[in-house]
Image 1 (cartoon, rainbow, N blue to C red):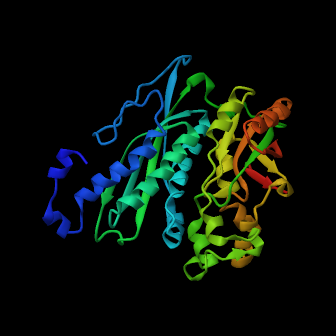
Image 2: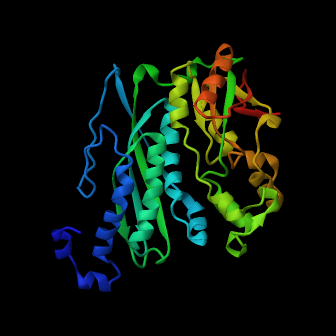
Image 3: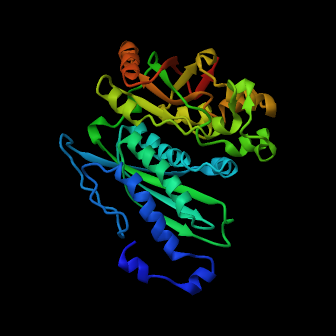
Length: 350
C-alpha cells in the first residue's frame, strides 16, 4: 500500500460502514489479474481517474467506435449461494463483447463497476479475476473500473456487477443485413449453458434457494445444478473475427434475453425470415430440466433462453461450407440451423 493510502483513513466513515482501506487492498489484490489483460493500446495504470487507450488504426480507412454495456443480472444470486465469485466476471464481459462483435467490431477495452454492501478485498479480487479472464478471451484490455461500497443499500454478502466495452470496426466492414436474401444459410454457435439471462425464471422454477446446489444431478450428466448454472457465458469474439477473414458475414445475432424469437429478427432486414429446424438445435440438458420442472411451453423456452445456441451467423449459401470450416478451425462446433426465406414472421421453428 502506498504512503498516500496509509495516510488516507476515516474512522467516522468506517463507523458508517465504509472501509476506505479495504478498497485500497482490493485494488492491490486485483492488479495481477488486470496485468494479464494489457494490450498494446492500454496506457492506464489502475488507480488513476480515467482509463487511457491509444488507438491503432493501421489498415482501417474509416474507423467506427462501437460500444456495449450490460450486467450479469440475477445469475449473481447463484454466485452468492455457491460462494463462488471467480466466473461471473466472465459473464459480465461476455454480455458486452458478444454484442459489439455482432456488427464486426473488435473489442478494445473494458471497464467494470462493482457495487457491494461490504468491500471484502479477497472477494472483489475474485470477481475481477473473472472480468480479467473474460477480457483475455476477447482480446480487450481492462483499463479501469469502480468498486462502490454501499452499506444499507446492498446486503453485506451481496453485490452487483456491470460493465461496458468499446470496440472498433472499419465502416466498410460493418455487417450489412440488407444484403441478406432467400437461400442464405443460418449457422449456429453452441452455447455453454444458460449464459447470463433468464435467471429470474430459472431460480423460480428450480427453487435454487431451497435446493442442494452441489449435489450431482443425473439429468445433467452427474454435474451439480450449481456448477451447471454458474458455467460462464461463452465469448465468441475471436471466432467471429477469424470468420470475417474467410467469408462475407451478412449478419450476426447474440442470443440473449428473448431467445430466438426476439434476437434473431434484429439481425434480419424487413421481408426476410429465419426458418430454423428445431431438431438441429443442440438443446442442452439444463433446458430440458427447466422446461420439465416449470411445465413451460416449448415456444416460451425458445422465447426466453438460448436453448444451446449462443450466436447465429448468416452467410451466403455458396460460402456456408467454407464458413463451417473456418469456425471449426477457430475451435467452434458450428451447426447448420436453417435458411433465410421470404416473409415477415421473424423466426419460423419447424
